[in-house]
Image 1 (cartoon, rainbow, N blue to C red):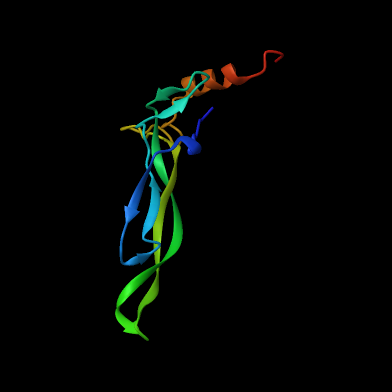
Image 2: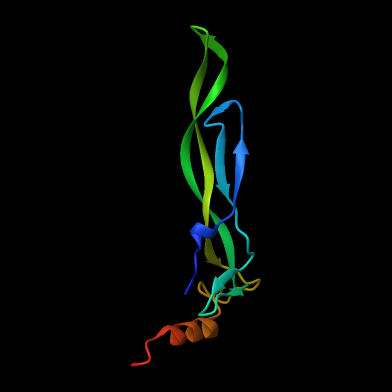
Length: 116
């Protein structure tokens, strides 16, 4: 089980007086590893990495028209959350070698209903 706690993510407020909106909340990851298993232990075979969302903002230019600033569209990527990705091993044996197969089997067996 991978636990993504989007509602518990910490955010930083990015401020830029030359853009609209001036304030944009940006998520950042608290853990290096990922919270996994039935007790939510941090697992360092995975790493927590930001998830980005492309968005459009308005950027103020140096010109004015009719006594007002002129804005242009600008495309930026904003971190909106965190997710887990497998940590790559130094010497990969195969395409799937970055996942500890024994640990994954253990996690899967822990999450099966007891009737199986």
